[in-house]
Length: 303
Image 1 (tube, rainbow, N blue to C red):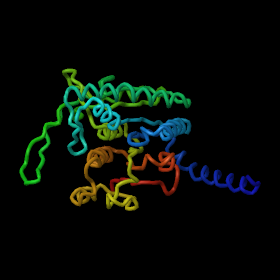
Image 2: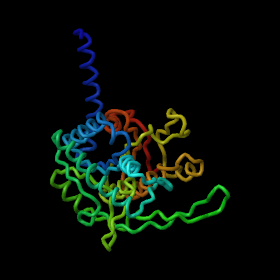
Image 3: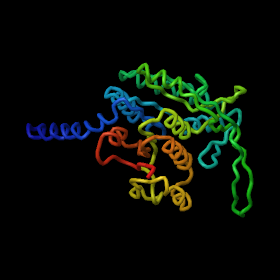
Image 4: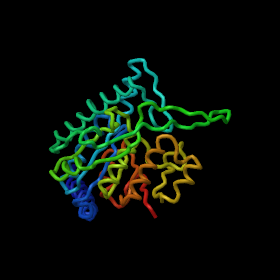
């Protein structure tokens, strides 16, 4: 590398750091809740980068809370065991056998892998599920009313899928207050001790609301909320909550985006400043969203 190229590269690094400084100051001491899923959770290089980014956030004074999914890994295990996978409005239909797989994969292997990876890079992560400290008290979700191709309505029972009845954030507050990084697996429990599969997007939104987080960030496998789902260049940069109903009517908010937008709406009305839908397939997307002027993806605001 020539001396001039070295000077140019150094100048770019200084520019990036200078641009990041005001954002680092503004986020210092604040809570950022991150829903971690998609390719960022399955590709080795992205997993490593995510862990490094989380440690960096902690080092500059931000208090991250991670809520992870693992749907792809659960589906993979179900396929290997010859069990069918079915989704309704982005929610996995869950019988007792599937629930055992969900709890084993999410609360076990995935959760502890994320914790170990963060700690390897100098963090102090602690893995929990919704069962720990009565974090997520849940109730069985009511059957979904769907319309078939002929226009006839029918009720579909989702099985052991839960809605959050109450959230006790004291355990997370204790962990955050002692400089730990909570990593939450979205398994809830009923008052009778029955495990329920709770959508990770919903859990992230509820935790952000309970903790009055400064930001709620979803790592997805799309560049953001798309005006045209077939065109990844049609990212909508800013969405106001008043526009969401119209977007659902137009089909812009559909499928797996439904629980994300519903949880974002709840969180923002509860006091979260902004939410972000960003492309987790882009290396260091978390830092690009938080610490640059342009950001990436879609930001969602109240007004």
